[in-house]
Image (cartoon, rainbow, N blue to C red; front, side, top):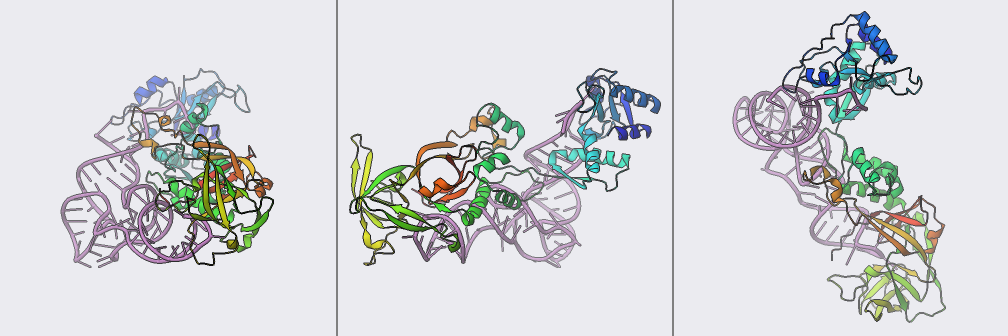
Length: 447
RNA sequence: AGGGGCGUCGCCAAGCCGGUAAGGCACAGGACUUUGACUCCUGCAUUCGUCGGUUCGAAUCCGGCCGCCCCUGCCA
């Protein structure tokens, strides 16, 4: 950059200006009125060269002088009103230490660096559109770049219910609203990775969202759709009972253990199967039982039947309660003829629920992540509000005593599964005993 | 106010050297289902910010207006 600056000085296209920051601001004019030329604008090439050299060597204090491009103080584009190219900074240079005291401005260094790196299309976001004429000015007036780099702008990605700017993300981390840059609720790549999002699902999301110049905010549902779509074909199904209640199969022998074979992916026969132990004492999810069922409730209810996935059809016989009224245990009877199919009498059982043998189930911690904010568009909140006012208090629910099927114990950190009827989960890489919910399954059932 | 951009379905987004509105997400029905998942059908802009002009014909060309974003750092 330095050599090219010398070149521009020699061409009479750059000059050392002694205006103070305040003066320069005043000379710049306003959006509607032209600026005035600096009194130092027409120094000789020799003087400019000498002063620039001495700026570099640290002879002048910070803020005393700048190297400026000689363009047009009356330009309607403020960036072209003799922008600073170099300013003095008395800070240690990464290689020259305190012997080097000048540093180039972004607008000057950017096109040069692009050219040196062989960049032909320099992509950036919309707010740099006004800088493009200056980018081109540098490229054209240095005139030495073989493929001349070109700057092309496009709109940055925004997603509903989250923030994307570094400034905001930084605040979330530093104020402790999240556990760090890789907190699985963050939209950072390291967080998405920890959450369980695959690179391919993110690529697919970005591809479908598209690239354009309109400021926009993409529905988070599109991102979720992309990871569900991928994991539906690749994630092995497993059973986890997040909020367990005890179920006793009254007509099943106390000391018997049967193994049922469940598909790893019902949509993909090649995915194989795994064995799941069945005993008299089971766990099912609290959500799958209702003492007073809402309409169209296809799960366990008084007098009703459900299919235990991959096993028997079961009928609720009795609800045992604790003294405080809470449910202690559900007692059901199994139709032992339905192990491999439907009942001979042709009756239809609508619901299928997941279950685990109490004796065999392992315990795990499960992190249920939800949207970090309650407001879809954080760029659109009232003036007197801060974006942190909209943080979702329920963005994380920790379950410490979830029951998981035994086979999950042999999985590795980073492995992804579909917890059947619940969602997609990823074994955490930082805390291997926990599973992160990547995304829920779609659920068309409305209470 | 001067300049630079942008405005097509709830959210994205093709189309834009004129020929009569792709696709995805979301949503709503239905089929299938030992995941209320998946899959599969079906529906979802007579209209392209708006007004007017040119034309046999305009989202596409022309003009006015409206709305939103960016620009007055020796930040990036």
